[in-house]
Amino acid sequence: MAESNRKTQILKDSSRLFRKRGYTATSMRDIAAELNIEAPSLYNHIKGKQEILQILLLDLAQAFTHGMNTINESSLSYRSKLERIIKLHLDLTILNPDGMALLTSDWIHLEEPAFGEFVKMREGYELSFRHILRETLKKEGKESANIDLALFSILSTLRWLYSWYLKNPDINPIELEKEMTENLLSGIFNRK
Image: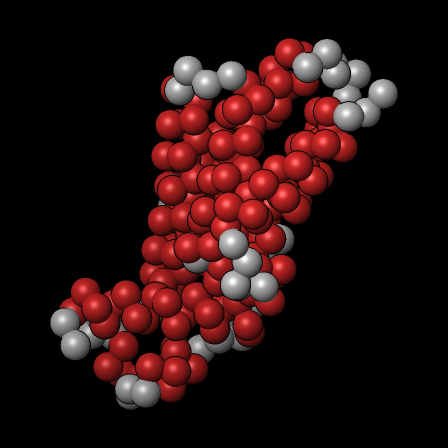
């Protein structure tokens, strides 16, 4: 197996094991056993468990940051931008549900400087999300809505979507996007 393919497989299997067992409960021996190789062989491809976690989380954080930047720079209406953010979460969840699980809990195990880099990207993403949500609510005449609660509700649902998706992987992505967008936004925009 070529070096890049082996490293990709290590990352994929590690991500699944981290989701199932948690980062701290998964050892390099566990990862090696999953790959059906000797534990010392892993170190030919990767420095250790922390490097795996950093690659998995920073790659996802960069994907979210890039997606948000693209959405922010677009000429779409604020509501359309909000819908695109939901689509971004859905797309990344479908592409990498195991990795998405790491975003909800295992990011706290990152070591510096990766921890600081991750937190900076996460905070920037949430700040942009909050701005788009606030502007959308203004345009929709719903300024009285609690922005922080609305953002928390939407993000909580999107961050835990991987758990539902893993049990329902055959759902049509277009239907999922339509349902999720309607479910997440109807409560905010249909309020009195």
